[in-house]
Image (tube, rainbow, N blue to C red; front, side, top):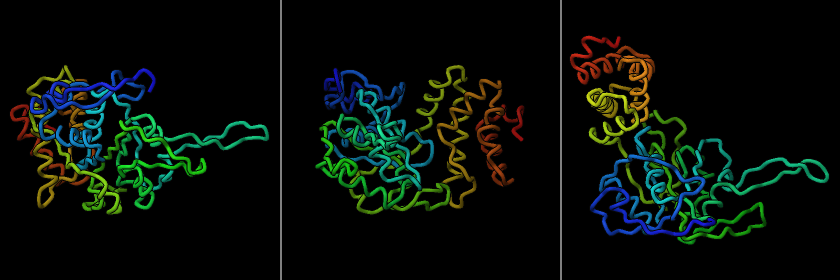
Length: 318
């Protein structure tokens, strides 16, 4: 916290959304050691609104949606712009519930090795006025995640059991954000997000919730062009159109494609297309080779032909 004074940010100017001009957000005057650097993120009124509301009212925010749609990046882009440190903890089914609270190590003592406990990301964020990002929260054990309930209350209370129940000071700038692929009390409903388990309703009750989705085509094209500057814009548009066809096949009834094509996968595909001199090279490595069944390969082939047009006829995918 040293030399990191609080600074007011105009939300409309900072995030390029005029509807929020004059809405002032507290942040820090300079970045910290754990401040994310996300450049070129495109905000809209709809995507920015829940972040502004949660930040202004000190509400806990949960973002959920399909893989690679930009949930974590959005958190990092928002709080990075405000110069916040973001302390991120990935959740998984067998994790120790105390992993957020402390870490252990062996150090030499007078009588031999001693077990030493150091504060984990949660008490550090709470004390220093950082963001605690509980990434993939539904993948953590439901019983273990209850450890967060007192911190999610307005009192922001956390006591260290390993230190005689000492209370961690609560900084007014502290914020709690979580992400996941499913609703907190939904679990792995379609079988694609193995490890996601239904969480306690009392945990979900402590969050405001935003359903996150893939970006509109024009914004996704901009991201592809920003991240892969050597990619031709028309090729970026074609890749994004193809992804849209495949996402519709994934989410449709009946489901005819097994994977949701993430923005992350599109960026990888674009990088490989530039490197290999062909969109086919990127599509094969990021999409085609993940498919086992012929009917899914045919769906990909049709989406490729529909999006790429004449290029697809000259450069067959399979």
